[in-house]
Length: 287
Image (cartoon, rainbow, N blue to C red; front, top):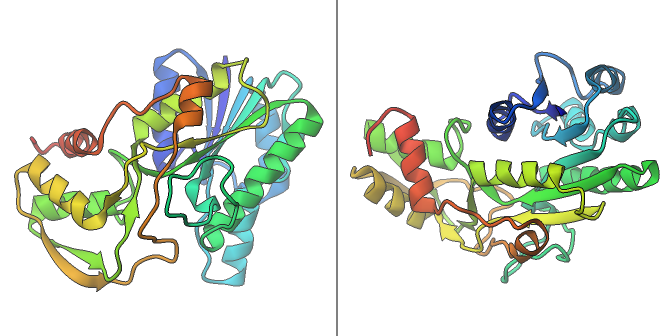
């Protein structure tokens, strides 16, 4: 079976491509170097040329400083041309969404939570999810959106929290902490990839399904640092209030993963301590 993975050069995309290749899929990966997905003509041509049986839509833009950057990010994150470019042989298109499509809530977020995005990125991701589901329904292609919570694991961008914390453990550096309480539901990248593959291959899954991917456990930044210190066996210095925080940070951010368990048979298999241990070991530093 041939898979097209947009965002194949990104964090989750690289892990997904490796999993698919290991299982014998014929994988076509689209990266920024290969095609500009902000260009609908180039993007559609790349999809048609790939002739995929399944599309994994993982590409995501984040730049938003200038008007041009916001326009390009919107184009990548919505990709309104994608479904129309699918060949007739395509059986499913799977979109990796984001929990930032939802409003903050003091309770575990299920799929019926209000779409009140936190920030510009969340707004473009929410718009893209709705566009894909609507277009796929009209085209008659099975579709699904997987709204992942905070994904982590080996190979993440070095400016993200887990790489920053583990780097501090390795080098003796200091982790800047946000001034306000910030909790997240940390989900292992391999578990997210597993959900992507399950969704693509489960023809019984109703089209238009939206599933949240998380552990149901939220962890504060301070708690994560403490867990990392125990896992690595190294002290990790912190500086309280030294990080400005992000516009979507919240004191409560946790997934209700029951729908994914019920409809997909998916449950997270790696808890935060084990995931940090694996990430630390993958960097060549014994835990």
